[in-house]
Length: 194
Image (cartoon, rainbow, N blue to C red; front, top):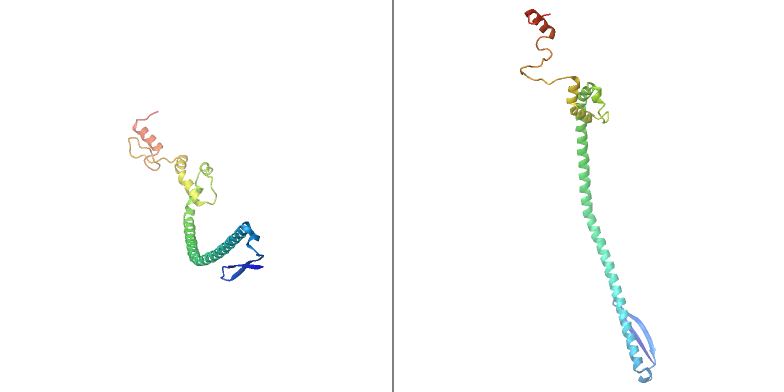
């Protein structure tokens, strides 16, 4: 009787017993050609299986190494991320400060503009004031409405633009004689009689 031991080397370099078989070899005819071929095929299949296992173990080790490398790279990139995050936080804080300055200037402008708008709003005819559809405390919207409706307010108030010195200039209050003075003058000259 003969004992056959098949060993292989692991990825760590240590020998490993894969199979131990005991065969009875009293004569070469006992196995025959078919038996020998089957035994050779089995050994070949076993070597291929061992090779696949070794490949699989090698791939697993490579994956683990790659995962560790990715983690190291991520940790290193995190340091860069921290720099970028700090820069963005500084920009945000600066923008907030600028927004605060802009808000303060806006409030000062509203404070300066508000008395004039309120005075003009009080003099506004009710027809024009009813056309306003903004907020009651929005000074800028009121100022825009006053500017948009200025021509309408002037027309409603009867204010006529000055026409100049044409052949028939229109009479402007405070300039020239009153109608009564003109009538008396015409009566006295005889050009106008009853």
